[in-house]
Length: 313
Length: 278
Image (cartoon, rainbow over all chains, first blue to last red):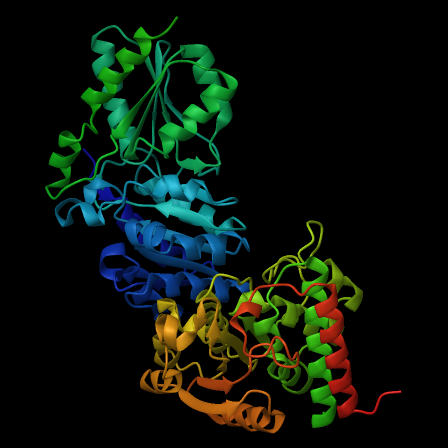
């Protein structure tokens, strides 16, 4: 059984690795030890700038730097980037379409003990509403590393979402390729499709096993890009399996579930159920325990799958 | 450039700004008129910019942090030759490249998109930081509003600039004493602005923002400073148009035809006093 690694760790390591190949600049807001931009700081101190606990300024300074042709990563927790500096991301980065990449760590409830104020369940929702924003939500360390390089090579703003929790490695570093806007078929199936993103993809694979025990064949798709979403893979899943379940470490309002529902309703309406935070704030606790408390687990995905299947005409 | 000529250009900027706002029947004349001398000095005396090469990586940069006074910026850029003066009449039109607030993607000569207060000064820090990082000699100039000083982010930027030694950055504050809802001291007193910047570690000067000699002197002082510079400029909102001067109500209202004609007449007369007209 391979070691688990947090995607935030993979992020920091990726910055340090790609700092050799690309002339990137990295900003942090007094959280570099947590966001792991400290790895880049150690390797390239002349290209690392701590902006202190001032996220709005950090994003806007990065935007200014980007106007001169630099590619800039800004980091803090998801709550304080997508949350506190939402307007600066929207007006200073999004609207002028600048090369600022927001490396947002500690997304979702797996922040754990810090509690609700720090557990961001809204970031995918708000970032989705910014025109031209690309949103990456990697499922494991391999995907996270590849996402960072894809972000560097993308012309325009990117929001990358990483977590604090150590999670299993699902992909092979040698063969994995991150393609913006493409979902990944993880396992075939015919009765229902489970679409996971971030840490919930592994849970979707577990749910597939539970459903198999009950004679239900579940297709599993990993969605590493929330925006632009892979419409084709969703539509094919709808047409071929007839029912969908989405699973995300995020409010069921506004994120993956909403994005998938939007595609279904306009192209191939089929029953769909959403797994995620059910429009409630989180709380302090151990990350693994909180996932159980809020139903972000395989059992709930399997249960929702059966509900969706039952709604098939 | 001769101070008389700069003064005359400032009046051309006023006329251009007012024409833009009048044509659109929308926009911000008061704060556009108050910064005319600053804009004239920067673009016609100080800044290394070339309308034929608007994206020169070594050019000096300008950020209008108080982005709502885009009419002043556009009038300046037009006067400098970045685009035809005729186009000022398309300001805020749905098909125009002259957006209500500065848009770097669409308008030649605009170095940063602004409009939401408090952001431009931070972006100016970012551009200045880039110059330091790349060891380039260009300077960064920004103009903020005095009401804008109420935005907390301004003070985040004020902390950042001295921390990273951005002595290639100079910010003008258009201290005209008025904001939308009235006098700044009554709405949410941000004064003393000069003391605040001093406390944050800036080189600070306080001048008459309509006096070109004082502007020149302040700019030269800024260029020699080892710290970022803040030049607090005492100005008159609506300067140059008698019925607009010192009126908060002219912050964001467009003149009607009669008012426009009257205003342009006054500006023409003032300009002719500076350099003899035919």
